[in-house]
Amino acid sequence: MRIPLIAGNWKMNTTVAEAMELASSMRARLDKIEGIEKVVCPPSISLTAVGRILQDSSVRLGAQNMYFEVKGAYTGEISPTMLKGLVQFVILGHSERRACFGETDEVINKKVQAALDFGLKPILCVGERLEENEAGETERVITKQLTRSLGGIKPTINLVIAYEPVWAIGTGRAADGLTAKTTIKCIRDVLAKLWDNDVAQEVRVLYGGSVTSNNIAEFVSQSEIDGALVGGASLKADEFPSIVSQSFVIKRQGA
Ligand code: 13P
Image (tube, rainbow, N blue to C red; front, side):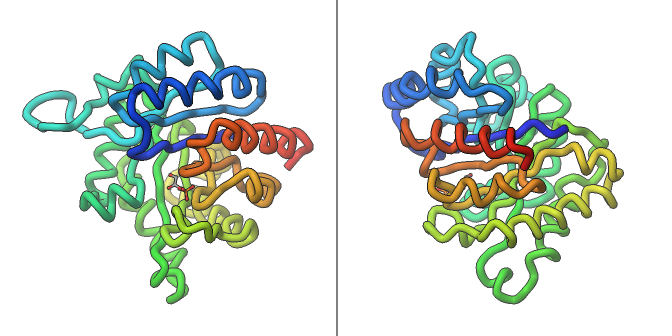
């Protein structure tokens, strides 16, 4: 039984005051929705403040990135020990980190291992670029990303994978539910080969890319898709809880 999960990636948006306001305005509505895991990932500078606002609620906190070393001369970076106790989840390998900051699968692999070592649940992002999609290379790209970023890592159900086609991020052009489902099935096949089938069936796999309250149903109604990693729509105090509650209703109906 995979517990559905909806995570909001706030990216580089909100000041500390705005993050606190957003978390406060969503807390009560999100807290009421049970049977689904709800995660918000504000900018790291707001984690402590938002964590206080979410204290004693069922809404979980996630970071957007993390370095793999524990401490030392790594100016500007945040370590797993700094996040431990503060967040439960950490987004790793987001395509914006790959594209803007040169993150490779090899670096992401070390980050995934470090997160797991410190009891944090990685939300590992994979996804193909537009030209790769058009060349019919989606499965090859995803397989390579997964194989490299999970190489040497022991099978664990604490991992969450987010399938985020790069061409669907922030474009308003989401993948269709069936295409997302097919790729997510491929992700589970890769996990089954890399680890084993039982673990592959238990790991949660999310879809991300232009998810809104208008199209969430298309994704979560697929039994292969366990939820969503939401960008822009997670910054809207009405929209994000609506995405979560629709997902809860659809998954409760057996999807
Ligand atoms: P959008 O929902 O804004 O397309 O962003 C998706 C994303 O990158 C979430 O990590």
